[in-house]
Structures are given as structure tokens and as C-alpha cells.
Image 1 (tube, each protein chain N blue to C red):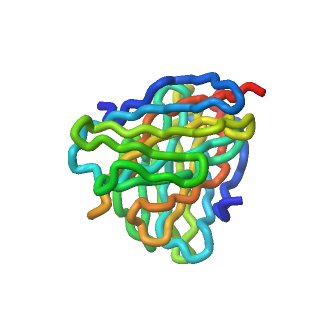
Image 2: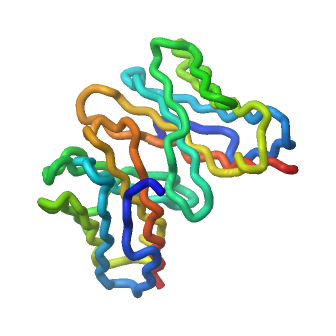
Image 3: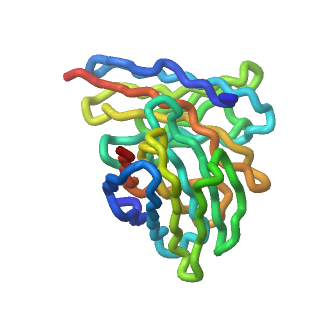
Length: 113
Length: 113
């Protein structure tokens, strides 16, 4: 059972453009939604995270938009750069208790020069 | 550099064999997580330890086992290996075990031939 569905599987964006990756979740008990960035040969690294008490969180060129009623959240990368080319994973968990992170299947982003 | 060390980086073995993957968490982190990454399944949570005790279990096969030692390093043992066990195995660590800010190692690439 896939509890976090991520789309698209791959994405090509021109330098300077906006990259948008979407995720949908099923478990309404989830209350922590991080995004991880993974470069080839490396492990995933936490990029940005949001809790459902806010609808948007921005850190530099990266923004998470959260829609609680639709059970969806998305990552927007503004002014995309070739250095942003990586695989991005959304994830979800419950903050309380011993919940573990459930990851989406990832989106491979290529930013063309 | 995440501060999480995984060894070996690459492992090639035959079906039916047993291997041990090792993980040293970041200094001060008490919790260790093991994930399996494959192209079709994405990042799958296997097991979590906190200060030497098993805290959560995911999609870990009975042929797989893990432990966390008093010095907090962890080992993942994979036995009776099958071709389908070929994957990238990641270890992650965190301070509290509450899933926030997981720091991933660079992974062990396991190839079962």
C-alpha cells in the first residue's frame, strides 16, 4: 500500500524556470511533511519540511505548498538551476509516537542549462 | 558530509550468502534507521533502533536482521541472499528518534549475482 504518491516520475525544466513536484497522502494522521534531495552517489538530505498548521513554507528558492483538505503538498523550486538537478523525495510521518517516515517514489529533476 | 558513515560502499556477493552492512551514526545521535532503495520500490523503511533498542519495524524480511551496539553503531545482516535483494541500503541517524532531520549515509550498494 503506497501511502504517499509522488508525481511526476521525472521532470525536465529549463534554467530559470519553476520546477513543481506534487505529492498526495492517504493517512490523515500524518502531520509532518519533509522533502529530501538526493544527488547521485549520495544519501538523501533534508531540504525543507512543513507541518499542517501552515499552508506554505519558503526557504530561499524552495517553497512547500500544503493543502490539508485535498491531502496534497507540493515542492516549488523557483529560478531552477542546473545544480538543482537531483532526485527529490517527499515524505510523511506522524510527529507523535514512533511513526516512521513514508517516502514517495521520487522525482528525477533535470535542469537544462 | 552528513556525518553518517556506512561501510562497505560496494558489496558483490552470490545468492545464498550472508553479508553484514555497518553504520556509524552522527556523533550524539541515538537513533539509527535502515532503508532499502530500489528503482521500483523507492525508499523502503526496514527498521529503527533507538539507544540500542528496536523502536520500529517496517518491511524487513525475516532473512534480514539488525542490531545497535552500546557504542551506537549498527549492523544490518542479510542472509540467504536472493537476486532481488540487490539494492542500495541506506543508514540514517537522528538525535531523538522522532523522524525529524534524518541524516543519511552514502549507502552500501549490494549486488547479488
